[in-house]
Every structure is written in C-alpha cells, then in structure tokens.
Length: 93
Image 1 (cartoon, one colour):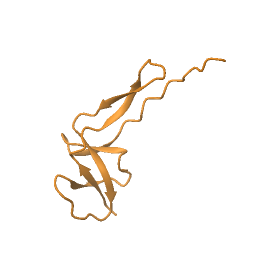
Image 2 (spheres, helix red, strand yellow):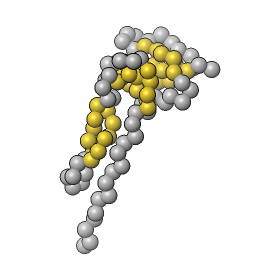
Image 3 (cartoon, helix red, strand yellow):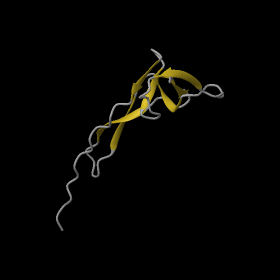
C-alpha cells in the first residue's frame, strides 16, 4: 500500500547535530539542512489539511521527523544521524 508524507513547509529548515563544542559539558552544534521541510506525519490514507501543509507520496520506510522533504528536488531523504557525543571525563573526588 502506498504511503504519503504530510509536509510542513512552515517548519523549516530541519537541523541535525553535526558536532559538539569543546565546552564542559559539551553542547551540541546544530546544522540546518538547506531546502528542507519537516515530514510531520506518514499515513496510508490522506485527509484534508490546511495550507501550506501538503501530502506527497513516499516510500514505506519513511518515518515522521526522521526524514525531511527537500524543496529543491521534491524528494524525501533521511535526516543525517547525530554526531556521536564526546566522552565527558569526570574528575576523581
């Protein structure tokens, strides 16, 4: 059965954790994904939505908030995985 992704263009751009600061404790560095919009929901049956929301067909493996819609090529891609968090050294007491 074909799935459809509900796209929320007002929730753009999507960001992901691309690295960590050298602060103590480390803070995440968020990088925006160019031309990206949120995949807010994935359903087999569509329903009426208010503009600017819209539906677009998608693959069966698409999961809301783990994928994004690219407005430049009108394709859906997975959000990059977050950069691994650095190990925080806890001083001995």
